[in-house]
Length: 215
Image 1: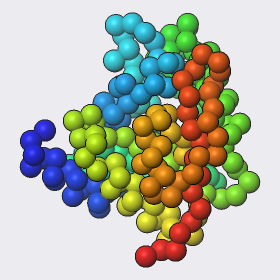
Image 2: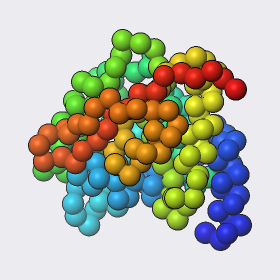
Image 3: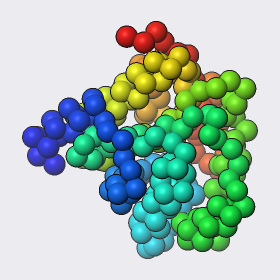
Image 4: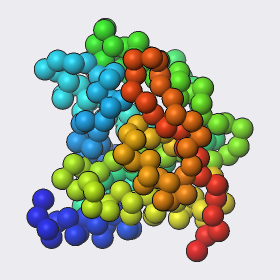
């Protein structure tokens, strides 16, 4: 990316726009690039030559089946970063038909040897997620590698939290990288618990933020 493109991305992250079904491929591609080296994804995704294509298909499935129907998918007007917020009231077990529809893509992403890792991660996340109080759940926040470390994610997060605060809601997330924990702390999140899906899994951090007075 050129300096001009990065600056446009930074400005766009301050006022992200909602993505729709027409943006599915672009959103999935941004997420795929953003999470290419993510510790959790590297742990449960298949570890062979098919990983790259499988991760992209997996991201596209998540956006199509879960994010767009139940959440709010935002991105800078020119793309390059994605945030996905889901209301806690919209969270819940997937229907049988949805699970059956997604299973081939999930199996293709993990392979037989690692599908138990993804199941363990889902179980751990569900067990820790506080559902006794309505809140906004930051399911994904991703920035393409070439724009990471330049304030794009922070601007996206600030814009999303402004909407959350306007509703008087707390917020919750799981950070899959220790490097991102300070970023979330700067925006008011605190670590509830460090956890692992199982003993051989990389650590993750469950984080909660109390609402702030809307500015």
